[in-house]
Length: 208
Ligand SMILES: O=c1nc[nH]c2c1ncn2[C@H]1C[C@H](O)[C@@H](COP(=O)(O)OP(=O)(O)OP(=O)(O)O)O1
Ligand SMILES: [Mg+2]
Image 1 (cartoon, rainbow, N blue to C red):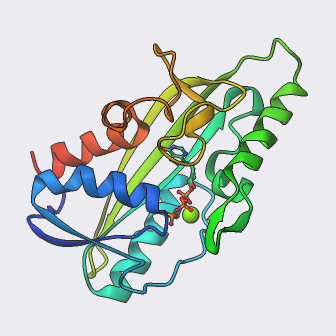
Image 2: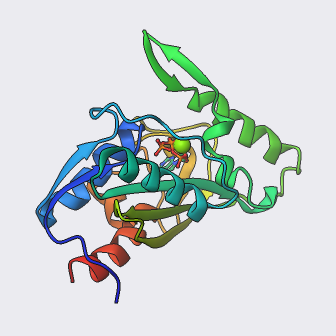
């Protein structure tokens, strides 16, 4: 029997503002009070794992140990079929850290261009299939943990379109739609994304 969260406070162990917003919106209806790793001043652990599961557990455990509060981490990324699943676990690393108007962030436009450039090298007929993966890991301060995996399939478009969402959203068109994740209403993205898929499993087990 998997341990359950119950109600109360939970730390969202991410330093990505886009994820924090999406995860808080998904958890609040279940009566959880969401604190952020950033606002608690928790350090950002190095993501030394080679799988989404390993990295999600590294982040959740680091937060639970440092805060003494049950913590939820998300490790996610985009995989391109014609690139043998890259960038995958290294999706964030492909976007260099930059400072925009004084605030730290990652250069997503550059990263999307890098993916497109590598795909172009495969020729004009290379399949443009891609998918996002998301692993959510919950870690309790006593070392217990639970993991949930999600995925959404789609294809890559170029040039990037839309201003909503974050990261690679402007180049990802989910299967069966014409708009990119950055053009869709956030509520629509939340209903079909890799994060939504993992969350549905988390909610079924934790709050069902
Ligand atoms: O819905 C998404 N829409 C667009 N891009 C996305 C999405 N979900 C993940 N991604 C990309 C960007 C993210 O940065 C990277 C995951 O890297 P990942 O290490 O899990 O996240 P992160 O470093 O941004 O924040 P943190 O580790 O503090 O949670 O994949
Ligand atoms: Mg990260």
